[in-house]
Image: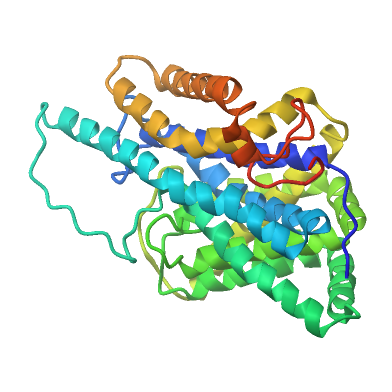
Length: 405
């Protein structure tokens, strides 16, 4: 079976950039949230309202990212084939994970040491550092690359096997029929939310305020993250099979999806509180209302924002195209810089409403500047963003549409 190449969809470029840039906002807000002892710095101007800068994007942004990744993954099969896609993703996802993890982790540790010494009067307290193991390995913010590698390692061999044993693509036709039916009704949202909701209800201990546990520690991802992001990747893959129908459904229902998402998120904030709650909730049906609301919020935000982007970005927008191209570099490199700025400004006598935008402005200025000067037109851009058709056009960073090869 062959897959017809798809035209570039500029709205999905914009959605992917939004998901990555929201990650920068989320991390920048964390030093301003009261009561997060795990973060590198606590700003002197921390206040409860800043928690929303973490809570709301954390609900949906990575599910949105992995859904778009799955959509683009199957799109790329039409140009590259299974082997070509595997080699491309090894270069642009696995290799950045392997080569960038060490320098980025070293920078994060350096900033952590600085923050610790500042907190202890310029001296480093004695503390024992545990050895790295498979259970505590710090993937940092590059965990999304690790999960992408896992999903490709599953999807591509499975695709090859299905093509071998199902030459008439009967299974694909069944998937297409189901996808078409689900895309046009709320039942699709309910079914996508159900696996993660079931995990939220039944997992032994769950911190409901934090939703999907971030798989940034350990080489064996937690089950909740695998369910959430694996479901999203598979949904994006299936959506590409019925692209016209699915995109039209998202586009037509974006108002309703966003309205429901906002209502559910408002209820969750009222139910769980504005500030972080580290209480571990016992398994049981008592969790069901929060679990159902959280998972439905995930998917209504995801479909609502994607549908809105399909309306707003129906034509190419050069600014958003540039930002989409830069977003992979910005997200890869942002965390040590954000942390350093948080430490530097933590005791400055300015309101958080000034300091948080200042951190974001400096971060984006530096990273967009380095992208333009040393990445976009260099071998680094070719490595991360793919081969150019010309100097003005490159594939979307990290998750190519293969519209220009």
